[in-house]
Image (cartoon, rainbow, N blue to C red; front, side, top):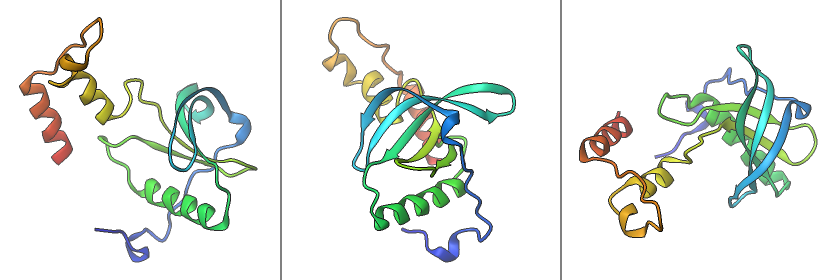
Length: 146
């Protein structure tokens, strides 16, 4: 299961975002390739002056890492779906290279399911999170499969 160059649209246009339009607020975490920050992004959506976004930075600026970064940005540009986090674009002015994504205040699906699934009750300290019903979990599974 992979995507080859021939499967990419030849007219893929990755949106470029100016660095001065991205204001980092706080670190959210760290991945294998760099840190992830909560940020405000200005002039991204015409209907809003600024929106909260998650930005993924690339810590390794080697040629191979840069190529992988650009390839991932092209793939994400083509991968737009209502059930997948929205990819807005990149900032390649200076270092670090940045990818800009929709900010999900509840975290990713894995984190949400762990916090609200059947095991959450076992791991809860203090206030118990609302547990998802079987019906809600089935609905989430159907959305994933769609």
